[in-house]
Image 1 (cartoon, one colour):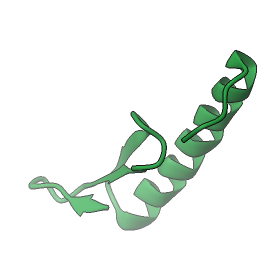
Image 2: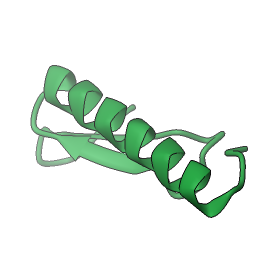
Image 3: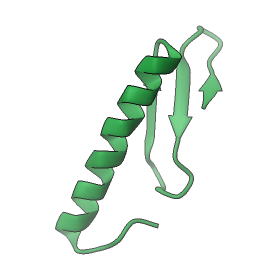
Length: 52
């Protein structure tokens, strides 16, 4: 997780390429990345591949 210049946060998941999210606060960024991870895995399952 990295703090942005505007005070928000950007979160990336290195083991899931392209899985990135943001939030205005630390807590919001964590909530958003949890949703992004779930969505990423759901799409990977539908496509018949495994993440990573």
